[in-house]
Image (cartoon, rainbow, N blue to C red; front, side, top):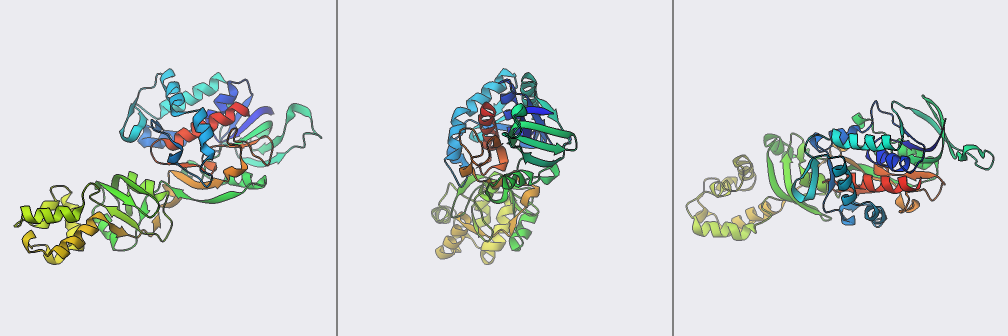
Length: 402
């Protein structure tokens, strides 16, 4: 069966591309290996889908080729997607940092995409297992303008344009595989090393016991390494650290590196502790800290940083000791043993090298008619709706040209 465009993957970027191309009058087929399309959309944002962000800039994206994303983001901005959400009368709200979420359910965003696909008469087939993809010699076989032939468990399909929107390796239970990278390599593309991104940290040292005891506690902190710094909530878990600041930093962290936890990002604790010593000489340090911090965390810090002064009044703690404690409160150094990996990662870092793709159309520079969009490419957004905005932008860019 022949189509103008075949899209492999019915996620955010694939459905966006399908609806855009379909509404241009192209005959579009979406093939998905799962039993239904848009599974990651449905689970995103705690089921509410953080569908974009009010403050999208190219700086919110990580890529070996950082300028690549600029063109598509400019041509299909967050305002374009917000207009589409409003056209479909989907109620939404802003949370902190410009994050936009559905009021009701992520299902609203999936339905929006499916309705737009319907308007473009897009054909969607699920539970499709693609066995082979071959490039057709268009000179030898001029029929239908077919450039690609796909053999699948649902039959044979051919198309002029083939779009790979099969995602990365994150959350394998949702059907994630490395199939897109396989296709890229088949057609001579370079795939940059991949790793889990937006993922919790794990620890195997004494900090693991601390985080286990504090499991469920969230505190505002600044988390940093030599590359990046994020001030957001951190969440102690049975395995280590999660929460927005940890997920954000994981995109910039490499195995073997230490991370720095500043539990008082707004305060220079050396100054603060010395001031407290003057103003509250008879108080215990834990009492003073407990006014601004969960008591359970204060007790863990006390056991680690000032056990010998646990019952000492502030007046009797030497300034040198207070300075050492303060430096730890502002820069608590810990070394993760790793991350939770693809199992819980929201995104995959690395992927198809974007220097081999057109930033205008997402088309391969190596194989005419072959396009790559979404998470399979080496473009990764920060937490906060940026990965969805990239899906809409690159999906729209490819959909305009396929």
